[in-house]
Image (cartoon, rainbow, N blue to C red):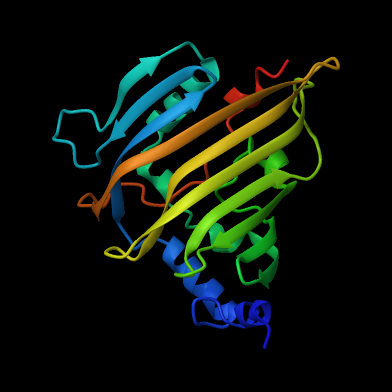
Length: 243
């Protein structure tokens, strides 16, 4: 049997459909799982560093901006949006991934285990997300050895025109994942967002890169916390200034 055919039949020792189910199960966090983390966000020459601790003592902020360098409005908008979320750690989890896999196609080779799909709208897609989500295709790469989610790439397959007339000709998102053996969960350790477009025949590019470190998991003690994760928004800060 050729090597590529073996990998098409068995991913991490499982048939493709079972391997995909296992990977998706690991991307769905246990109920009430929380995460403390540090994150570094960069765009152009600007940098922001943030820290989130869901177990911060009462009266102390859970979300902190710990470093700021350079002026960048869209980067500030990303940080502000993240800060205003009820549970900022929800962005580490892709628990609606299973629901968003439309027209999924499984492919395996000796060096690659991947699922190509068209993004299916979910409850996590808000009004800002809708025109982008409707045009999104994705590719999910599974780790060759473990079979867990390793990377997801999204891109729009046709331009999006915003209400102000801005045409976004290119929009790409890349998410990198790690896996916690102790907690049995796949989680985001970094992502890149790139948007290109403009108005009146002009075009420019905006990008944001996020790297998460020092991720520490635990269980929530507050039943009132919002525990459902949300998709990282197609941030208007990236597209609003593409003039």
